[in-house]
Length: 331
Image (cartoon, rainbow, N blue to C red; front, side, top):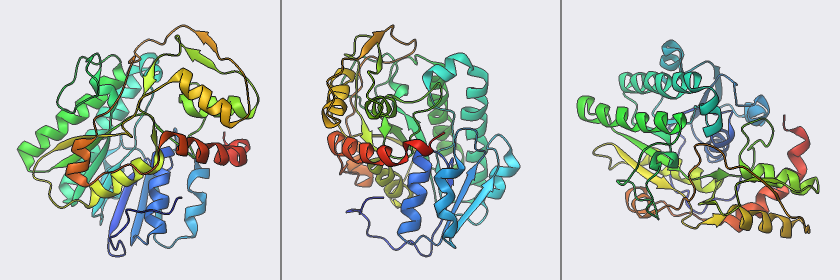
């Protein structure tokens, strides 16, 4: 965890729930909250995609608590929010290809599970409910940079589920006066993101290839571009969103760095940092993938004071060093 420039608030009297807290983004958020003295940090996770290794080091903190449960079970959600002030809902089944291969399970977790958490948080009267939205919601809208109120048609079952989350939150805001903030993540990367498995993200895959001295595969011609966002920036967004006090309705905001990098440029950066001169191998584009992605982050700045601190190149340097030490332990 990196020394934060944005931490200013005393967390000692605050209780947080991080669903999916054994996953990539969730465990980094748990680490931050524990480091800066949160009164309670509870994790709800069923370990379907999360890892016990991600949270093992947190068990030494008296403030840490683990509930092994499933968001598809309302009772688990109700137990998890008991006595909690702030919720960051990170539990979900990610990956566009996974959703194409298994839309039913993606729907059960990302929509039914999300609704369970929303109902439980509303009934427990938590102060703020923040959830992981997705840039996939922009779908086939061609505009760049992406602005929150201009979306197109979803291109995958996963994108459908994340858009439905936003619709449910909007209804809860109008119907129950229960306001929430959705963070539309743009390709978050960094330590604890696992390169193993069929649905691994591109940056850990590229880094693993570089460490092993192998050329990576690229889907398409490599000119697909993304607004890659280092994990510490996403953690900052979650903390600021949970602690915001000026929420008058439901909101959704882009969480990104605000720069676009093609996959070819990305591999070149990683290869150069690793002292390699290897050309990638190209194969067919994946179904459901958006071709270009770039975020306008002005709304996040004005609403919660979000200001990304770590650039893509700085994040890649940190991630490379982390994977060199920890790659052997990832399963």
